[in-house]
Length: 73
Image (cartoon, rainbow, N blue to C red; front, side, top):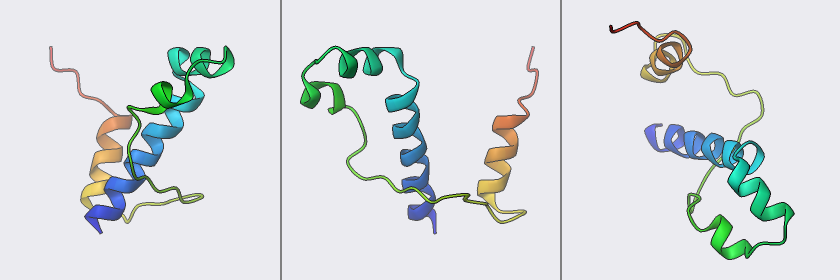
């Protein structure tokens, strides 16, 4: 189960890098070397449409913490 969660997080990271990262998008749109641009992406990743975590799971706690950060200072 933890391996699936890790692969899902890698998939989200990859999605972000390919869609929103300005450096990657610029390189892909301007004909940069694809191999070099994609080199730092995870080797394996996993996507699932409309993925929902189980309530009370460590994954749910992580998602909640990311969406509701604490003011430490």
